[in-house]
Length: 268
Ligand SMILES: C[S@@+](CC[C@H](N)C(=O)[O-])C[C@H]1O[C@@H](n2cnc3c(N)ncnc32)[C@H](O)[C@@H]1O
Image (cartoon, rainbow, N blue to C red):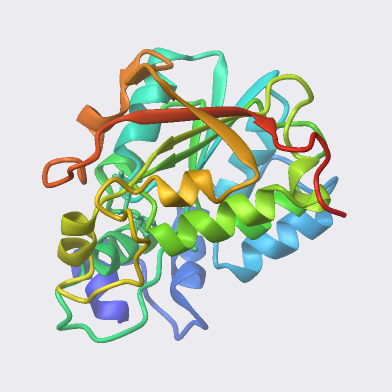
């Protein structure tokens, strides 16, 4: 895998290292980028992110973004193009874009996800080349939420999540230890549901488990504890479905927003 993620011309790899991010850290240190902004105030968050092979410089960047007054967390950001547009249009908004970035698995599966994951790991995504100061791209899943400071998030964004993933994320969000990361009053969750055709495409032909109303992807929303309503396609100054790479073959291009938790209280 090392050969596929590090440019032979970069000169980054000179000694055997443990994992992809170790190579990245070595490269970052060589460029003086590893002079991380102190992250020690959040040891558990730091531990979670480092275990997921995030580079020290990105953890440092996150520490800076967490000090901004308004914060958006995107889960499943893919190549980060939507997050970048939101960051550019809203310089006073911190944008924390995350994805599972799974690069294990068969190399010949043709998976777009894997290609994007490898590019993220090698810092070769276009967004990583021209990163706005108010944006960071991290390898993380919804499990990052309990590690975040309480009441730090103004918005949570999901664009074309796989149904199973969206279901699990919304389920977790309704749990107290996840819900606490959202600010009181705001709690705005923005979702562009995903559709069947792109699921097959994105996974190189493999099928997911789908909901009965999969073609519009709304079962995930209605089954959740959140009350969703249809909203403007343009959020934070960005036409979300238009900007996402995955909207092209979708039968679903509406945007849905939730601000209210059914029953008012999260599960303990
Ligand atoms: C259909 S793509 C959408 C990407 C992006 N939101 C967009 O619209 O361009 C779904 C993304 O979710 C990511 N993903 C899948 N399972 C995930 C999980 N459990 N946590 C975070 N991201 C996940 C995949 O790696 C993939 O990048």
